[in-house]
Image 1 (cartoon, one colour):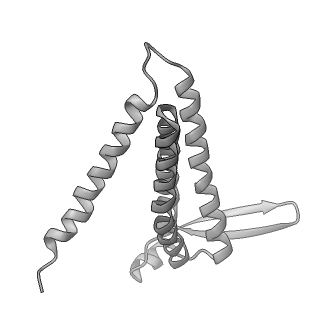
Image 2: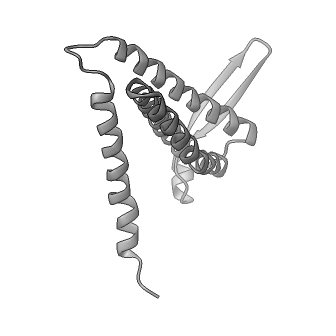
Image 3: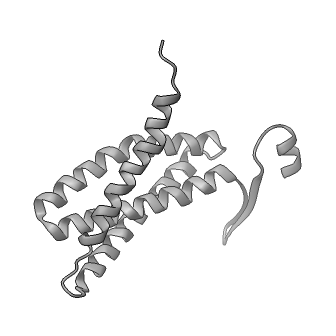
Length: 155
């Protein structure tokens, strides 16, 4: 129960039941995993939007953005995989969840392409997606990375 988990210092979990025609299983999903799945899906969706926006500007910018996203996703997805494993998913379940969240980037890219096809007063998707994406990276670096650097005491 969640009160027992809280008493032992662990976060409460959510129970879900998967019923397939040939078997029924009960899966316990840790709240941190749910949060991770939602956040990773949103992150991957915006990556897809950024890739679509970059390709709408130029092929060269699209390729460089795709390469940059690919390389920043490697450590990100490894970290997410570790979080999922640490919070109770099996290796197989964690891989399936990672694949599922990666699909959000494809959906984001498709949405970006569709949005770019609707030119309203000659405004393309890149006009607003690229600055928002860049601002998001600057925000994360300032709030997270710089904050950690400031509170680290010199040796």
